[in-house]
Image 1 (spheres, rainbow, N blue to C red):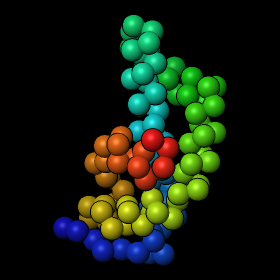
Image 2: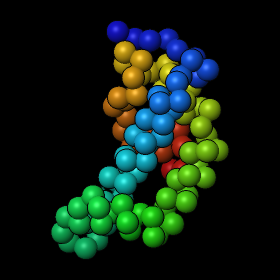
Image 3: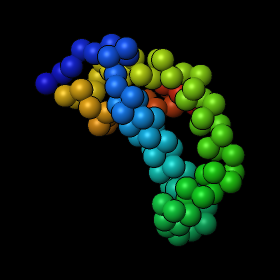
Image 4: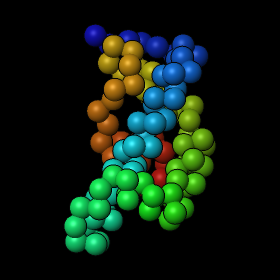
Length: 100
């Protein structure tokens, strides 16, 4: 079922979940590249700490905030059953964040 919502119809919880989803995908991507560089799976916790310490969290906050209305509009139109459980690729995320 597809839900044709507008940004103004998103609840604060849905907005929070969308931001959290994007943030988690960014940390997972960072984990991949950090693990590749170090030659072993660093795990999500170490990756998240490195993501914050390397300045990536600050960059994410800036990029997400700058593009939040477009991101929320996309999510409002494309999320299934009005939830934020999107199946976006990293390419789609980077395009929405304008950080690619």
